[in-house]
View (cartoon, rainbow, N blue to C red):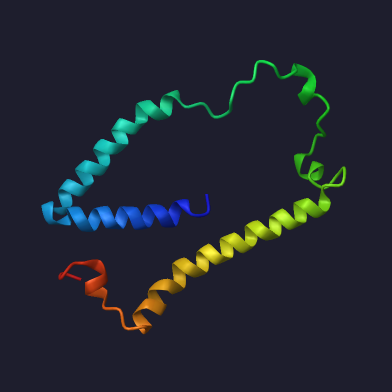
Length: 120
């Protein structure tokens, strides 16, 4: 989840840079075709796994508030540590996405050379 957006941006940018020579309209047609091909696949994916061996009454003993359940039965320190770790991952992802272009430009990288295009 934390690297999906940046990875998609990098892969999408690389594919766009490679295919821009065929015209920008073809990029939109290609993206639309891929999206339409993925719709039937997404239709057959399930949100949760079906577990026929799981007891039906296992859901009955859960507390009403799932947020409070994270802090009961000795899970408070694990919940706080996991929340802090996720926050740090999000912070690092944000900082890398925000500051990498600035650091690259200050280090002397040429924007036209990085993009591989003479138009920008």
